[in-house]
Length: 188
Image 1 (cartoon, rainbow, N blue to C red):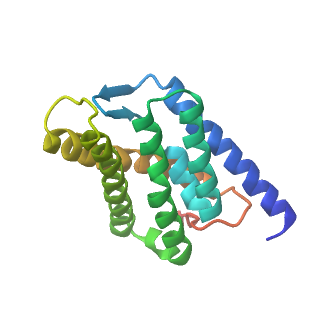
Image 2 (image 1 turned 60 degrees about the vertical axis):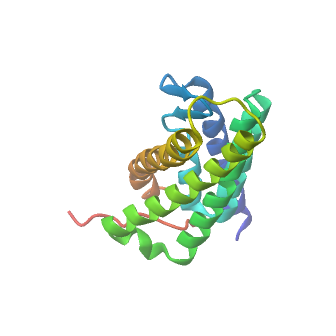
């Protein structure tokens, strides 16, 4: 990779980190239900980074997690954010190896769903540790941890993935740095 390309990717990662930190802090659409928080578009920067490269994805994920820590969010929220490194790295490596995943709506949807399931499972594991560690949470384990956190995260992840795809489609046509996935120019 050339020096200019490394600098470009570093700048893109820094900008996406800033977005990833700002969205949860300033978003007007935030729902808090027990150990689960839903902030619209809070994962968009992660998905955009995932489309670029595994290195950018890891940097953005770690940067946004650090942002949650420095902003004083509850430990369960910070650890949920930290757990996202797994789905981000899986997705970015998978996409780097098989960019053809993004060639059909069915594959695009299945890719997002698989990442959403991994994402939801990881966050449910984090909340489970707090649950069995004695953290007070309303509701039962199945409804709170598996339903609200697990399934809720899958849905939240899919919504943010959809938003990221809508943003990435026009941006990928003008980004002049090698990326894992670029939208093909339409043949109108």
